[in-house]
Image (cartoon, rainbow, N blue to C red; front, side, top):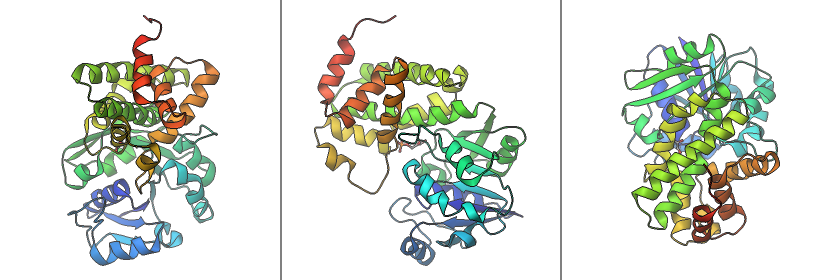
Length: 327
Ligand code: 13P
């Protein structure tokens, strides 16, 4: 029996907990930061807002008590938005009895520190036993058993360990040794996802979208390589794969933020709401880096300017199309 503690009861945390609980050799606990939400999930066995119609199996234990969640867990799974990750893990740091592996599901970058989620986890939980699971994976599709392929990045034996325990005949997990690349790809694609939404919101067509994805991937790769990542990682599931899902899905949180901005809705209205579009803050972290380091990232810079500097989507596009010619 392998015991998993899934920390975070958003759509993705719930979907992964449901996936893991399908295996009778797994004992799964899902931790919610909110006692009221935990109580509703326990009573209804459904995450009605984020995963309507998906039954949470009775075997899956739901709690808002950190100690209960991680008691004798063989594996911790963190599904917490970057902006809450540090504070939330602070509630768990004294509960590390042994060095159980931690699988990070978060796709973002911490503002001001530029820390990747796996670095925050390592720092707070004092461990190097951290894997990153990333790739095109909308929670509602995984929870409904639709085919999904992801990539797990970790050092040594941890990647195959995760691959074996998380993989099913509907959830195929590849391994990759490039943790920095997998994690940066997952964070950066959210920024391009916002740009894709802007493109759709402005009513542009297939040509614009194709150019955006292609040039966006170039920027993601350039940025990643400058931070020690392998270029090939950006052409795999964590890069191209997740970029496609995020930029084309009508349900995607990041694309939806961009779409509403492109339609002319005020930024404050667009950002109000319970769901976290990670690309909003990631664009700020990326801008802080690119403006200091000189990495050429015009699309990600344009997204930053629209979100944080009051630039209109239309003039951002105009400036991108007319900036001085690059090879
Ligand atoms: P979006 O909700 O922006 O599409 O991001 C979800 C995701 O990362 C799917 O792989």
